[in-house]
Length: 260
Image (spheres, rainbow, N blue to C red):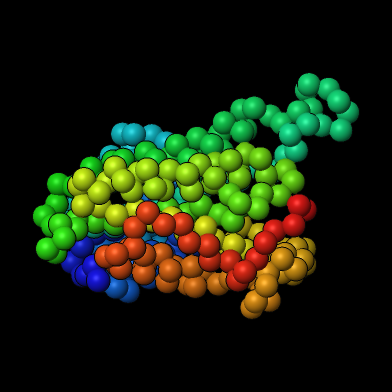
């Protein structure tokens, strides 16, 4: 297993939700974790709580991500990256009134794909470059590992999820070819496709709880939303297991999303 003790790790979107849970899980395994996010107050608090660091960076910006990678290297050899940063946008492809103006906003579609897909690839290419410069940790020549977060929406996209599903489907699609690319430098790449997890994305209060209760209809068993640590444990296993590579793993309680 990849020993994370004394290494550094980079987690994008690590200030909240699934990213935050992953930060805590990696820290528990001995990694010095650098949180990359745009939520300064929250990101700094999470980083301080695990004795790590925080870097404000837009995942689509090459210079900012490179600076985040360099910051991680100051904490130790960079061995792991988790790409959990992402955004969503709900809109039907065509409007009800039949006008061009009511069709899905093209700028919004581009934004979601840019952050979720292009941003993920940007982080992979730069972090893997730094990992490839490290010394191998075993006889196989292993130097590091990366896990991306897609979504079951990549496979079961619902009405109004064209942009989100396309972006997450792209992450699934790049998994094997990029894993093949990175094999040359001793870096593994896997993808996790989370199902319906109880995170702050759904908000708080009675309306939020009612909405989350409705979501459970699509979950096979256990009949509930997932807990963030349950996802984080799978991420850490894929990072540490030296024979896990080029794979997409659904973590969803057997959920299959209905159209709406």
